[in-house]
Length: 375
Image (cartoon, rainbow, N blue to C red; front, side, top):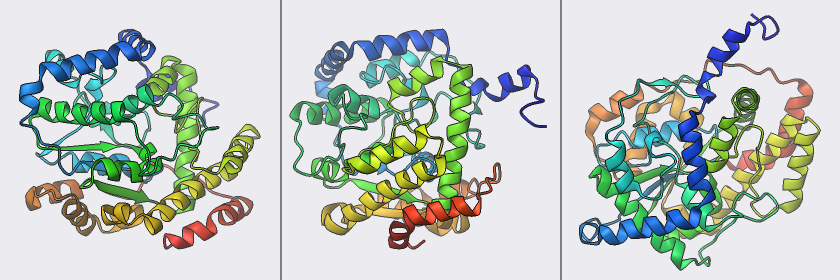
C-alpha cells in the first residue's frame, strides 16, 4: 500500500515510537535549560559518595564510535550484554547528571514492555535498553560541540580540567549504581575526540564500525526520511533529540565539522537543494577520511582500536564478536557469544535503488577513502 492511500491511523501507528510523553518533555526542558544547576547537583552527588567511589576503579572503558547506521547500536548492545559492563540506559534520560541518585529513584518505575524503536529497524527498546546519552555531558561543558561552523576535533593537546574531573567521576558513579566494574557507551561524535579520550584513559578500548558507502548512504537516506516525518507528526521528538545530543537525522540534522569547513558548507548546500546522495556521500567521506588519518598518525589511538566492518559482522558474526570481546577484554564465555550471534543478520527491511547518476556521485565523493577501508 502506498503512502498516498494510507489512512491517518496507519501512519499514527507507524510513527508512534516518536511520541514523547508530556512529562518527559517537561523534565527534559528543565534539565536542558539549567545546565549549571545540574552540574552543581552532579558534583554534590559525587561528594556525597566520596567514600563509596574510592572503591570503584575506572579501567578499560569501551567506546563505540562511528557514523550513524554503521552498526554502532548493535555493537553497543552486544558489549553491554556482558555481565560486567555498566552503561547509560533509556530510563536515564533526562536526569543524566546524577546517575546514582536517579537510578535509586527510577528503580520504582513500573516495568515497560519492549517496543519497536523509532528507526523501524527491528530493534526494540525498554527502560533498561542501553542508550547513547553521554553526549549530554559534553554539550553541558562544550556548548558549541554541535555547531557545524566550528571544528569539533579534540586531539591529545586538548585540556578541560573541570570536564575531565566531572566525566571521570560520572562514569564511576554509573558503575557504582549498576555494581559493575566496566563502562561502555555508544558515542558517534567521539569520532572527533579519539585522541583526547585516549589521553584521558590510556587503557580505553575503541570499537570503530565502518560500512560500505553505498549501503551506508542508503540506510542514512531512509532514516532521514523517517525521522523527518516522525518529528513532523510528533514535534516533541525533535526537542528530545536536540536535548539528548543527537543531530544525525531529522529536522535539525547537522554534519560533523572535522576540520574541513568548505566541505561542511558543501554538505549543507547539497541538503538545502535536496541533493541527499551527494550530501551524505560527503559526510561519509569526511568521517571515515578523518578516522583513517587518526589511525594512521596517532599510534596511541591505533593501538586501542578495533575496526569492525558491518559486512563482516553480518556475514561472520561469531568470529567477529569473539574479536570484539577479546579486544575489549570481556570474558563472558561462549553462551553469551552464541546468544548475541543469533540476533545478527543483514538488513532486510528496506531497499533503496540508486540510479546510475547516484552511484556515480557516491563513487566520485568517496572512492579514495573507501579504498583505504578496503571497499
